[in-house]
Length: 601
Image (cartoon, rainbow, N blue to C red; front, side, top):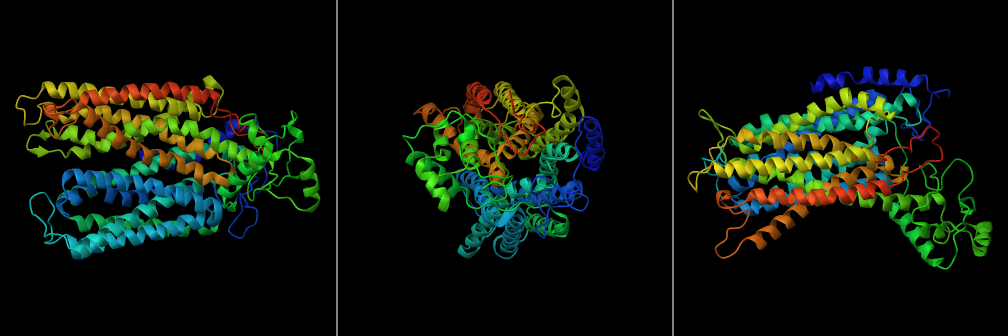
């Protein structure tokens, strides 16, 4: 189903373009109008660059890179316990730290991409680092750690790990984290760069791209969570890791293959410097009164923005105190006759860039609780499944493999949303996107909350099925399917909506930073989840009380923890609605087609 959906992209884009054809009166330019260029630095010719020819290649590249990443991550906790002989708690914490670090590194990749290297070079360099890390992990496992061959299958014990082997192992997995983390936000933004938002034909494709981007992620992880997890569970770690390495190498080669046809945006310089200039200029003019007429604020003349590679941004009324940085004084008029000093006088576009960051932060903070809900799938859901009946006849179902239902749910709901819900909702709301990004993110929060309700109810029934305190419940592990399926459905609305929202609302100079925010949300979700679990364990456990989440779940109340997350998500949803209603979208001076009219709840 997923592959046929990808193959049908061009036809669907054609249909969407035909629908909008009658509403567009302007002549479509043969070159891009959004500022994108070809690899020679000339304005990109639409017929020769970008569009789905390049985007599909990048989607395949991302799917293969994701396959490699999950080929390592899906069974990393078992490798740590079985091969490196770590305790369960230590291994779980090490995996959480590693996962959180992956997405923190996305901020570094985004910074380098927006500031200095550009999206293409950032993707290429971090993929190369990624490949080196995977090769090093595969070699270390094959030659140093998995001894004797086939050990670490749960029965045959491995030889004690050497100091050298352990050191190389940690070096390799953090190279993988650095490479994949830095690559992720850049590839998401680079893929969307292949479509000109000023072209009504390509604008619909740009909207659709992020859904297919998340689809590619799940197609890649599906192979890792089914085939590779099986071989690694049997102790064939080298096969799993070398397969991941081969997938990453193929991904890099495909990425380089498309080099001649990619569209590019020039890096805009260090955004931290521009933000500091606005804040410094605003505070240095603390006593200056902002003019009531926004036309009196300083902006460079012509179509080009003072921020390299960025379109001009229209003035907004939020955070008015920052407008002091663009307010002209007598000294500024004298200074302009000589040379502008951005530490004393900033353009409206530069000020609005800072405002855009400040405006999206409350929305971003409200998504962290959802990421806490999402992370339970890789931790407590698995522990809950391990305490249930995992047998079908004589066949044992690995609890971690239940995440396949999450992946299948994502694939199905992306197709349903793109092919069924969007056409229907677009007719009802007169919005070609069906639901705005903020509406979809809010819906994702609600569905995520329902997933926790389902998990809590399953846990109540699981405890009823416990007849022997130290034995698993008689309740079948397949009762977990609804909670996994609901998590998958919520991802389609939340994470795809996040990618579209943060990328669309980020100014041109910090597009990769916008994409990295959704990944940073996952990272903080991991850390906040650890804090909540530790806090709950401390508060609910005592001398004779095992607490809600003890080592043996039969003696605890995991259901209460799930219902606590329901309450936290409900409170978070209320705050989210308030922030979403307050939010005002970015308005670009060069956009006459109402692109800014998105993301309204």
